[in-house]
Image 1 (cartoon, rainbow, N blue to C red):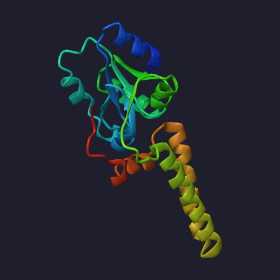
Image 2 (cartoon, helix red, strand yellow):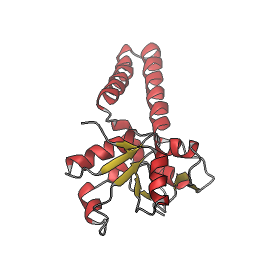
Image 3 (cartoon, rainbow, N blue to C red):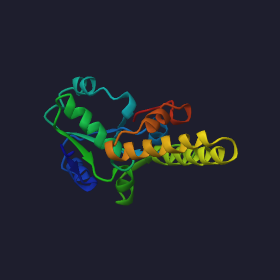
Image 4 (cartoon, one colour):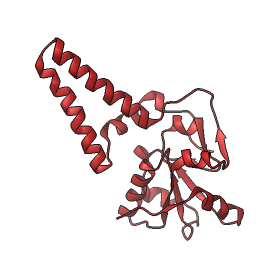
Length: 183
């Protein structure tokens, strides 16, 4: 089932029209601390409990819930999780925080400490493991080529299913955590 989306400008227009807008950001706390949409609340994808979140909405049930991430992939996954839990009035913000910022819409900038996005961390980690597998396969033993093949297969699987185990693992690392997780 395709995920319903909404343009960032339409979300801002709803706010300007006085309608309640609840936005959850499913990126890691460290990514959220660096920059996030004004008024968004951080609920990392790896900690998302759709039923608990909807139970705590305090009367905002008739209004849609908006989900955002860096570029749209994690938000789409979160929307699928909400749909699986029976909540359908959930919209993914098109293009994520990147598109929101490019459109010049209001954001909150936090720490000046540069955080590498989770997507880039996955690419760096996967590329490093493939390179390591090839180097060890060439220099030590041919069996190490299996590491490169395993990572390649994992990347294909992630592309086909939109589920990335390495991303979920990296999201739990200490450098992707922050003390304050909401505004």
